[in-house]
Length: 110
Image (tube, helix red, strand yellow):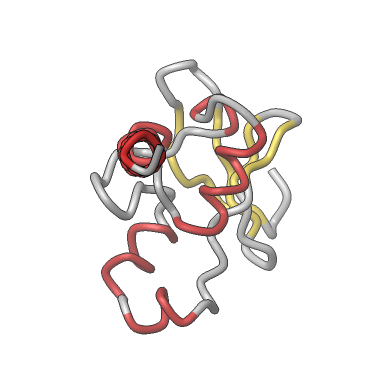
């Protein structure tokens, strides 16, 4: 192991070692990597609890572990994680509610 890497999670459920690059925080899982949320955004500057969870690759809403790219359904969900810090389950809950409300509004306005 190179000196600029530190073991973070040890062995996951999939028996994969996760490493954190000390200079550029990213989660490394074999040949894939997951960008953490941008902690310089005002939300994370004001909400230190959410920032602490995001640093540990935990969902900022439910505190579930984010285990890598395979934790997300598609590229859009991965991108949303880098913005909000929410896991797939929480994203689904938030955005499905928004979609159903929008659909109800559309039906009501017809």
